[in-house]
Length: 295
Image (tube, rainbow, N blue to C red):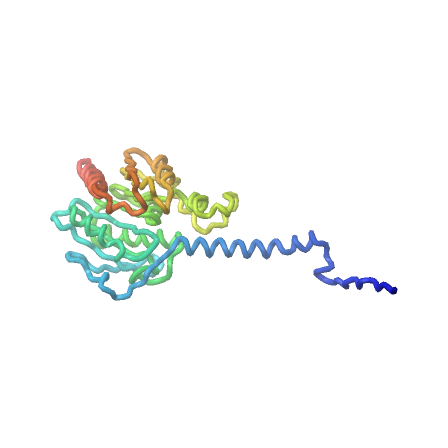
């Protein structure tokens, strides 16, 4: 019986290299793909804008104006300016909403604040609602907030000491950054995140903390809030299903006095519907703004 030897494959080029060398050559490609995957995932988790559809939700509430203002880089933003139902108002709120929807989703909160004696500017970031542009980067979020602030203080002539900056969820990063750089009377942070890195640890544990440097966003509220020199109210539900309560506590711990932490038992990510919650928020705002007038 004749045995024929198995032919030896003729390897050349790339496949002729040792396995370790081939793996080392693959690593840059894997790195680029991983980087792109993380950035795409980060963007999808950060922004959930809903565009204007002309539906019934866009009906203008009573004693409310459609307002438009332009950012420093030329993007036209849309908002609603709600006048306080009791006059004169006890102050003005600049409301920075969360990462989903548009201003129609937060109409109820704005109306509640207006009925409690506060003027309110509720505006959409670029790419949301009727605002121009596409979903913003972190720097663009801050630029949008600057434009809203300038509209109130320059166009409307509102004194900074009579202005409450109020942020919800992603909007707390916007509100904190704005209050750390611009004068205001009080800062309210509802369900704040402490940083993009902390959120990544909570929601994307597959990414080691040592690789968080590849995240595009920083959102370093726990660091920035030390530069806020006005009264700070931090609120958080102890059953928040989106942003861990510990992050709100971390932001509060880093804030200067005077400050107040309001933890809501069994509170989820959406707190305004909790009985008595808005009473506490408005009381803090009005008390702080009134104290400013006495100085």
